[in-house]
Image 1 (cartoon, one colour):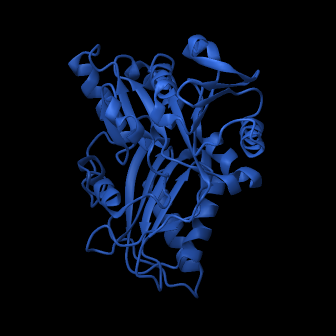
Image 2 (cartoon, helix red, strand yellow; image 1 turned 45 degrees about the vertical axis):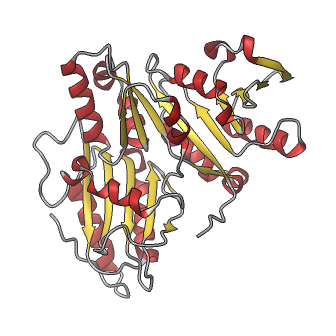
Length: 351
C-alpha cells in the first residue's frame, strides 16, 4: 500500500554536549546518501565545514559536496523551517526529501514537536520522523542525575545511540543502558558507533506514522524491556525520580472519538508530565489497528496499519510519565468512559 503522505519528514537529534551529535552530523554531511537532505544546525563552526563548501547560497545556508544543504538556525525554529521550505520552492536551494534538525544539548524536544504540530504551514508540509537521542555512556549517569531534560530527551526518542561505549567502564555502561531502557523501553537501543552501512537506516521511519510496519510494532511490543512493564510484572525500582513507564491493555473494540477526547484532556492537564505516549488500538468497525504517538502536549494524528502485528487484536496504551502515576491515569480513563453513557466503557484488563 503506497504512502500518500508527501510531507517532508523531520528527524530531531538530541543529546548532551559531548554525546556525539557533532560527530554524527559530520558523517551525515559528508555522505552522498544524504545528498537529498537539509540539515539544520546551531553553528557552522562546530561541524567544521570550511573545506566542504562549494559556495555560499546565502549567509545562513551552504551547499556541500555531498549535495546536502546545511543551514544554521537563526531566531525562531518555525521561521527557519519556513525559510528553508520557501528556498526549496523557489529553487534557491536544491530539492530535499527530508530534514535533520540538531538541537542544543539542553533542548527539550517537546516544544520542537509542538512547533511542527501547531503551525498550520509547517503541519501541512512537514511530518515528525523518527527521533534520535545520543547518550554518552561514560558520562550519561551524571547527566541523568543532574539534568531532568536528559530524561525528556531519552523519553521522546525512537532510537537511542549509546556513544563512547569503548571508553566507559562495564558498570557505567550497564547502568546507563538500564536507565535508558527503564525510561523508554520502546526505543531501539544502539550501542557503539553507527556503522557506515547503518547510517542511513538511522534516519528511516516516521514516528507513529505510516512507515510503522507490523513487524516493527511486533518488535516494539515484544521487547523484553517493554514486556516487563505489563501484566503486573513491573520490576522493583521501576520509578526513577518520579519517572514511570507502564502499559494499559484495553478490552474490546474502542471508539476512537471518545478515547481521543479523553487523551486530549489528559494532555491539556498533564502534558508537561506526559513525556511519551504510544498505542496500538482496535477501533470500532475497523479490521486494522490504529497506531498512536504523542510527546508531552502534542499528540499526532493516528494512522491505520495495513494489518495487525500479531494474531491477538489487543489494544495497548503505553505511557512514559514524570510525577504522574499509573493509578491516576487509569482512574481518569475509567471515570471519563463511564461518564459518557452513549459509549461503552472498555475494561482495563491488567492492574
